[in-house]
Image (cartoon, rainbow, N blue to C red; front, side):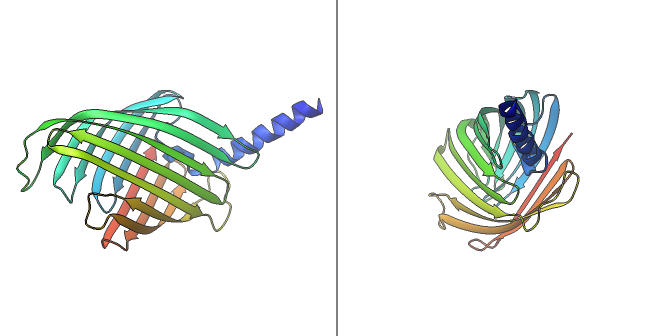
Length: 218
């Protein structure tokens, strides 16, 4: 009986961390949910709209504009929740994702439309006041001779909010893009979320470029 109560208490604590955390910003939502994710960083701007038919994966459409190279990418993306961990005061997730479609030059970039594909992984860990994440992606296609990026984040919440409150996180992101002139980027940012909406605003001190991210789940 005591063991059962202890198990239920641990599970309840884990679920409360999950409910009051920015979990909905992740690439797999609740079953039957739709999510819109807009991301703008020092390199590119993208829009992903995905549907979660099952709690273990989501399928959606992603369009991305690489502003430095003037290349546009379009195609479906599949994201799979490979593993989720619940602790007494933390939650962690490991995702794998893949996409395929086409790439084409925009503005003054003369490259022709061609096939492209990419694979990647995303991992995160968080408590009610601490956050860490890592993302990596490899992209190949046509005249794109392999593109690799990786990014890591660390964050801290100055206060603990309850479900339905406005939550605030102070974060810093460090990314590595070996093809860029400035291959290491550093971006301080603020994350705000309440209910089904999340907003992030930051500035790359490396490239003097904004970071503007928005997520809405419905």
